[in-house]
Image (tube, rainbow, N blue to C red; front, top):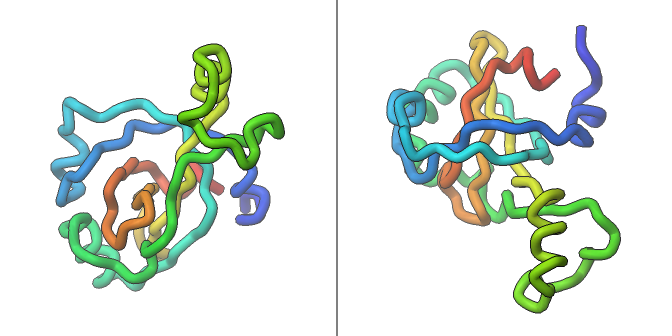
Length: 136
């Protein structure tokens, strides 16, 4: 059952994100993965064949990722402000409350889900692997 996808989009979670890995296997053994906060901004459902291709080619170009992903912060005080102009104390506060804006790539026949922050690119620049059930 679970909650609606719109409600899921308002939840901030933590995950292990791998940077610039090409396959699911590389992400699973990545010793350099960082623990980052994230929020799902969009769900993308792929057919099984496309999902398996995605799992083996994170660094390929995917139009559905273009222009998506970024770092967000819900604190009103930081809306519209440039990070470079924040004081040291403001940066610390921002870093406490910021999160990755991610796309959840899943397949109805698979249990796994890839949480992707493309940072505006067309490839899966940062990837966290989780069970789809954990998101809904």
